Amino acid sequence: MSTIDVKVAAIEQVTTLVKHFTFVKEDGSVLPAFSGGSHVVISLSIGGRVHRNPYSLMGSPEDTSAYHISVRRQERSRGGSVYMHDNVTVGMQFKITYPVNLFSLAKKARKHILIAGGIGITPFMSQIADLERLGADYELHYAFRAPEHGAFAEKLNKTCGNRLHCYIDSVGERLDLSVLLGNQPLGTHVYVCGPNAMVVSVLEVARNFGWPENHVHIEQFLAPPIGEPFKIQLARSNKEIQVPADMSMLEAIEAAGVEADFLCRGGACGRCELQVLETDGALLHHDHFLTDAEKASCKKIMPCVSRAKCERLLLDI
Image (cartoon, rainbow, N blue to C red):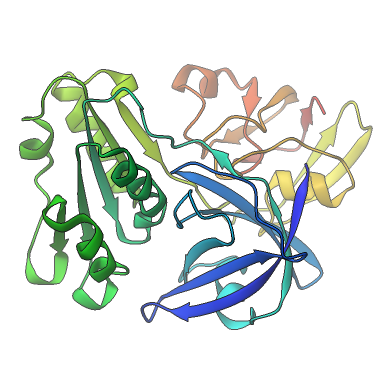
């Protein structure tokens, strides 16, 4: 996959857990255009291993002089978020992918309802810039744990005004999804990014109220889970690879020198899907892309986040 050479131009500590990073192109030229909701994948060399992590672009799509991302320090990080917080300094150089949008705005929507939980606010920052530019009708509903964890709430208040609705858990404020989604005009689209429980709740409530499926948009990049080590065999590449406990199948395939396709690396887009030719055990699916029937068939797997518990797993790659 083609990459862009960038360097860190600025770092800001937004909250105790969130850092904001500004990247510019190494040669000083403008960066590729993107649309609200886009993400890039950043390559990080950590302990001799390459980690490729997706991050939402936060700046205005009208300004491509720099790219902006924010990273929350994760308690159970495999290394990426901790590395970004503890090791990255101004001037460091990185390779990033070209922007991809898997969470785009529906241009023909009559109204847009944006629902963010915690660091899930990041993709909405660029979407709001697009919505403001278009003069679109929208509301932003932003839930976070405590006032000190409301990253960008002050900035959003200046941009969104009365379109912004904040819900602070520590003071007992709750977002009532039934009230919100049960009283919207026809042609409204809803977008959600945040913790799994929030995403599942939005999907369930929208389904109960009869929202068309193509009017409900989610973004949820999953980190590859840690699990038991196992071996995989690559049929076309004629390789047998050990997948360590803290490495995904996709990372292990790449580390073995085999080129594998990807876009989100978080179990959402389906680009890395591989055919399972043989297995003698269980596939541990963690993606949001395959249907329940596809998962039960044991014929497909998303190597970016899924694992296996077996002696033999033969993949078509």
